Image 1 (cartoon, helix red, strand yellow):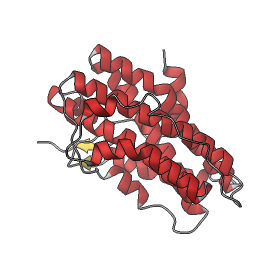
Image 2 (cartoon, helix red, strand yellow):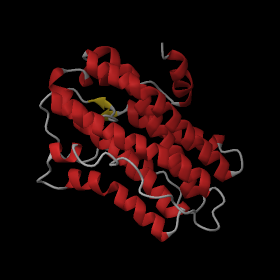
Image 3 (cartoon, helix red, strand yellow):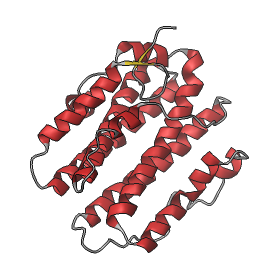
Length: 257
């Protein structure tokens, strides 16, 4: 029922997730790690979008508003004495930006970047809470995990001069969102009904996120960037298809035990 939605995602990516990763990911003993890392990925996605807005698109006061928006999520994650019940029970306006952001003067794509990234942040924060709820139902405690090699590997290819730095980061954002979408679809049929339905429910937003990143990259570039996209697509596929010593939501082919 969602093949039409996934068609452009799969066409964009340079490869499908290897079957060996799926086999490893659906093992019962991997469920805790899969959900914890997925939870972390949702927060990291929100933080990345927030960084882009603060660095490129808004003034200092608006940047502070964004930091305040993220504060409850980051305090929960980074504090050892975290209380999931208190976090989930906080004010009903918990997932709303406190005020409208003011675009920075001189960045012509500010309004578009703010609109797309604020919507993405709101959705990623919501997904973070949804994963926490699923973990709580399964008696899986939240834990801090160090990042795998995937995002770091992609970021090593970012150009060091603007506006190409921003363009590369937007393309990489598109790749990460597209890969997440593709993996949710691959995993869903193999998981329990509640988790499978949840992963299917994420497909539409993740597919839109990757498109939003690409639209922004192309608009800011103002020229054909297909060669740069193809290069970064190839780097992402290489990470996905190569062997990985650690299992993560975006890891490569698991090494044999």
